[in-house]
Length: 398
View 1 (cartoon, rainbow, N blue to C red):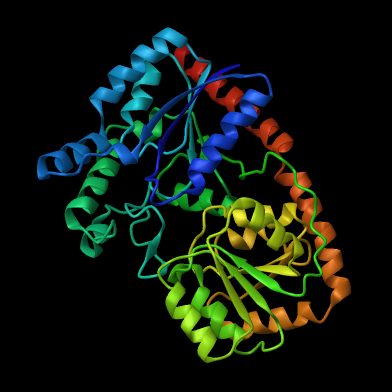
View 2: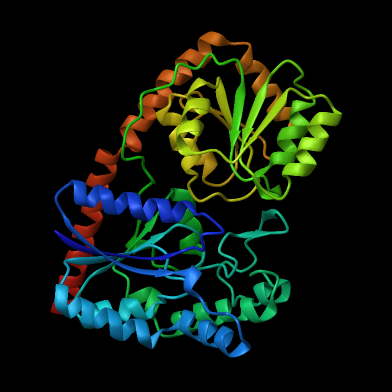
């Protein structure tokens, strides 16, 4: 199959899991014998040095005539069987869908976040879940300045969403949407996307690592050190866990505050900062379990399936997609989000039960093999492409 894969990469100063998923899917498709061509834009190239430049970017994020013309020429030349979009904001825009329609190419759009129903993209405000704009006219986003705390920037996002709702782009120009979880799909439907066109496909890891041995004698947290990630709850819970060592891998705005608190309380916590992938895999593989204490609607954290691949069970907040990805008693256990006492209790129970940890290591790894391997993901992805192609053919007949 000939596949065009399109993505607007985030700024290099803000590494994104979406960039990783885009590259992984391209490699997966090529590995299985498909011809893959990419159409890319890079946010590092954005010129926002003047007010005029900022206005041009804001207008183009809603509908880029330049992208329409460029992509139309490319599609006419290479004639792919399907076009698969990842992130289109801000430099690609929904005009790319129209270019595909006008050239007879079916469109698949992966929804890595909630950008299509939330100007902020995360259903998050002030560090907590927010659904004020879901299914509405988006005025709450303007009131709260949900994108970068800026009224003009938020206004550009609101205009992008409203313009493409009014012209039917989201309803008629995309043949299949890919949501990462059933939870995400439910919110996207509430926000107005067509339920019959949404398919659930999780993220994956292409190269299956060897399971770790565990028995490292510590718990681990991997991720950004920011409020919505629940790291303050994590540290509060560890005040109740003096005998359980914790390794924290990652960086973020709260790192200095958390390090100072851990030091003042003499907590058994080691901050390792930003680590490369090999180091993360080694530390997670030897951990007794991994903590994911998020207090917002995560999309699909790669750190969870990476833990499963290592055979490391996860203790996660019972919130949003996490409640779906982590199966109680199979791949891990769950606790009430924002409740340090409940987290501490769950850690204490699992720390004291070596037999249960061993069982969870086996079933967490099995969960990865059944759901999150490259082989399984490829089967689902190709079925989505076929459905999009059939839908396109049916629309032409009608």
